[in-house]
Image (cartoon, rainbow, N blue to C red; front, side, top):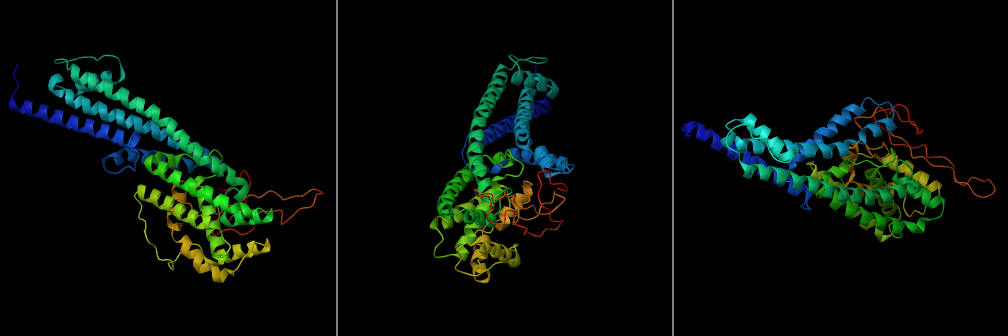
Length: 401
């Protein structure tokens, strides 16, 4: 049976269009699930699905009245994004193979039925035209391979998540929850363990290197939230970097060299994640450039550190230039990421568009000694970072957030 040239041309065009869709989908799957490097180019189309899912959950979370409820609503974002990504690939393959079947089925809708049964069942339904077993087999085999890759992909994600969260959980006793850089230094001075700071900076340097590789290779990991509402991997890193920058600025001769190394790897992590998300990043910021954190906030934190007896070689005014020179490297990316993830509103972490209130102070249990005496203030610091909303003291039900 012969067909008019116009029909033959349309069929050929449909086949080519379907082939292009299938090839692009397979390439996207390989780049996201197999190739260990930052997604770029065609494979970023699949990441658009993740962004849409995040926006839907962020919109839903605006109904929450407490931060704990908001965090619970946002928690499923990453798992749902993974399912949506898989569904996107399935739809793309079905449409692609349906178009490739048009020359034999002579109908896109009949090709759609055949492609659906080829991908998701054993065998295929031929509702019109000559059976095309080659495309049927290719469709079924492609989907089986994609599902197998996705299954193998999940343990890698969980392992990266587990490695990330282990150090974040350990930071709660060192820097409070939500974590804050000055609080980290205060606690270490309060209980006399400042000698452990070099090891802490070294651990976080190695941690930042691991997270840089995993979270830029598999961007969906960024959306996986910590098991506890007031813990956050990026707020924890920001606190460690602020503590390192303060120690280097206030005590340059006695600060450990690990602090400098931790800072460099830390702001590399923030900036590479920002670049992977398509945000603009200054690769070489001016050390004398302006930062959002005000000098007055820094000076009050230094005053509190002095009240705990933290060793200092400089005043707040003398240390400000060096602290600002370090913070300008990571502040912009960190603040934007904190807002993007609706991270806990810790001091010195910027504002949140999707929260109704301002900064929440780190929670600190009283430091007691045998005999009932309370060493140190026995309460969390009253100083917090000013915000566009009202400042709140944190309770475990933090109303108003």
